[in-house]
Length: 265
Image 1 (tube, rainbow, N blue to C red):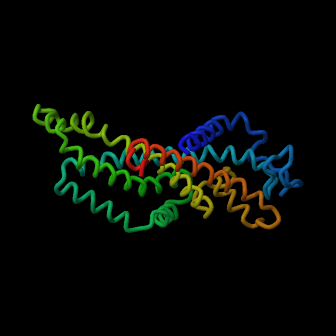
Image 2: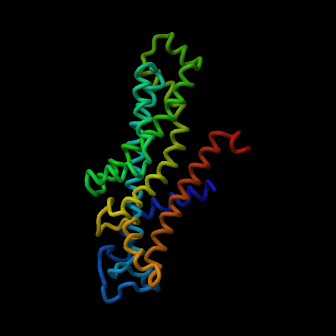
């Protein structure tokens, strides 16, 4: 399943990068006379309610989904690793302050908090990334804090401290490298969560705005034609499901590789 997940992710990345050159039609081009046309040889996924080629829009939408996922995971990882490392290494009131902030954010359902933030800031791709990043760093911070609490008691860390190594050197050269495998697993699973969250916000009209070809926006446009033109929702919905499954398979595989005991169990 790990190979399947890696293959799905790789295929999605290649499709997203090559979308501007391989899409057969302009994703925004409309053919109103052919609206709701079913899948055919010329249009493998059919046409939507405005006569736009769904296959081209799905490929273009992959760019938005991966862009949001990579950006959100990147920002969340940087912030979460930094705060988690600081809290775990120094402890005391610094740990209490960061931990209480984490508890406050965890008290709210993540998607509801993201909806509230985007509703206040206004619907746009930038605000979606900002809202998801505000709630996304919490998981990384908790993970890294626990890893650092354990790693700071290792003998080689204590030896480096006894030799006079600076705090920054101990964290960057000795402690944080031990947390990276777990962070990689969290990041791969976080990509799936970010893609789902972006699709949900776009579906609600709080994410990427038309005519940008977001998968969530495509699902929202097709929900009124579930009976007469189900292909409007089947293909973008399948794209979301397959890509999320790919990242989940990849994350599970990385976790099993890092923890052989879990795999054998």
